[in-house]
Length: 458
Image 1 (cartoon, rainbow, N blue to C red):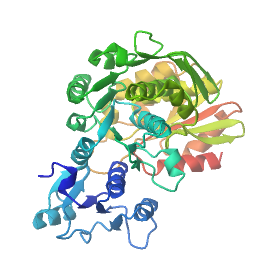
Image 2: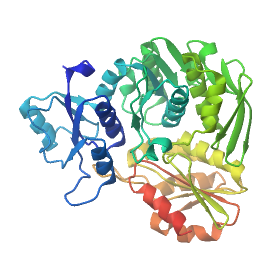
Image 3: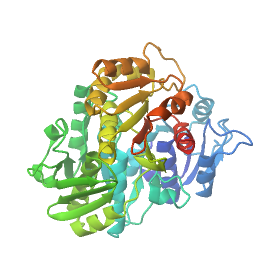
Image 4: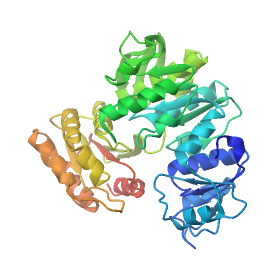
């Protein structure tokens, strides 16, 4: 049984190219472990950028054919997407090599450091990145294992979702979607929000209550989120947006273009980002950093230089007077927040969304209709293309057009373009100078290129 980070030296990841898996693989390599892995996206004589970046870190990459697993392998790591029928899992079992899930390994890593675990249904990657930047600039030499690439690390040619520092602090994301949030026992637990996403609300409350009880020395929640604040341990430790009852409240907020301005405990902050939700995430990072011992001025100087993360309100550019923004939003609350964040930028926001998966779209149908309808101003528009289907067994008894029809019935401007490749042609008459085109979607590897190509052809 693998219980400690010292229980293994030679580790193999099945599905190493995944964002969660590659982050842990890089971290383990960074602390001196021998790391290798395979992925179904690795093919002979075919270029793969993630493979190249992993190999540049000294991580050996193999085809998913079992050739990378040997008697020298101490530990096999699998993600929730890897089934027992996969050949490599069978080979590992034949060789008697321990097999562990990604989240279990992350929990073991977390126990080896003073860990801040960032939880909530939205904003984990952004808040983790902001907190990492603050602790870095405070010379605390932190480490991070993230669910998204930090722009500042990507610029170094890396994947960007992990970094190893010499200091005591490690920042991780505690995911509720697979229930693994209950496995972590962090020094500091941070809860950003609770909104319906992968599970029903009562299930989420139960998971986050266990997470709260597992947090050792400090538990920080968002007093501006109706459900999250019910789990508060101490109001003075909490953060909020314009709620002076919380210990750390963002006040005097205003957005000018792509610049956010606000104050926390009379310290002025300015950031290059958009939206109230970005301010909430920043205030969460400030609350944790300050209680660790970082002064507010250092927090402010750091956030002024914060460069963002991959596909989180990523500005692709401006063409013909239209700003194009690419965002990872994929649940009702995130889509609504993303639309609202763009509204101060332009008189008209044209948003496009590609839902992911038939089951989650069916589960969240009414929430999507309600949240997006409420976010749209009379002049704004929402466009959708058909649900992204990643394969496997799925009952295809819902369409993105069902969401569009529901939003239309609420009196909003809503349009369905089944094939996203026809989107630009359909949109062009609407794209007048001064508008913002917001492109939203997640968990589809082709979205990045789709959004970039659409911008280039605008």
